[in-house]
Image 1: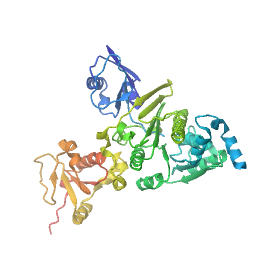
Image 2: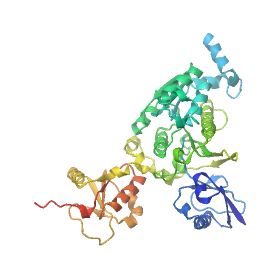
Image 3: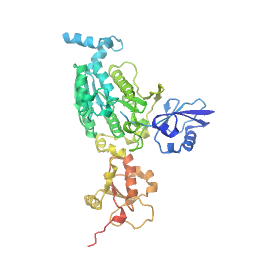
Image 4: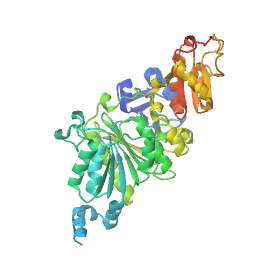
Length: 77
Length: 368
């Protein structure tokens, strides 16, 4: 199982790509720990997590088919 | 009678749509929409709202047209450089549709201005360009229960949503409870933006406004639409109310007026630093909460003012407990106390927050 994560906005400056893959993760907490190890700057960045097109709060279980997105705020007009 | 014929010819192609019809056109004519910012998002939104026959359109923008606006702010031309945006916009929109009312507000929107202006409009369209204003506008719309058609852009990506659509609707705080601090997220001037992107996002905002007014279709209520111009990717995400996130919203208009939204975003925090003299004046006025943020056992002990101890290392957990109208943080040299002041301002910008410059070490006791 490999999880695909879509990265939005200026978070791609940190990840270097708008698509990031990590090996299996049971839930979003584990996923974020892995991501923050891989990209330490994510540790201080502001973003919300969407799982299967829902913005989530708190820890959420993941399956092999989960679609995940990290979205930062932006304010340009 | 002549007027009616004119109106139907102008709007003929959209009145033809059975979902809109004469009734929808009438609703548009009666609607009042306030557009905040006549920039990248505001320009296309204004063009379509005016063309569609929205009866009253207000435009708020204090800025003048500049050369770097022109690649995306399509209401303006080279000859308009240096002129007030709202006045150029009014002239051009009137030329497109002289049958609507356009009201211009060449002011920098502040808390009191939100309450005053928003009250006379049905829908607010946010095309502003900074977090401080966006949080202020969001909170005002929640308090006044005005639907807020939100749009934001950065580089090649855009977001659209309808916040505070009704009593149960989500708002921006349900998505991002606290603003990022100054410099944490780059703005368009720093990160850049593709000119056509705000054209797409601003037009989508106008579309949401038109649907809200006419009742056609479905609006992006409780949803966040994201669009990526480079890959034609779009995503509609479900949002839900998060009570915990809403703590930061002022409970009433008075609290709203007291909130310093620039502080929330870490802007102007350097003004929080006060000299000993100002501190003494505050002490004389009374009703002052003084907080020593040094760690336990740091010396010298503070004897010149009554205070509480909240070491910086554990301050985050205690911030919510801090109350009172005026708070002054103190530490050894004034560095940690400024940090503490910023931390508090980020979650509670209703308090007058200060940090004693130079700290305890710089304190000159008055021994005569």
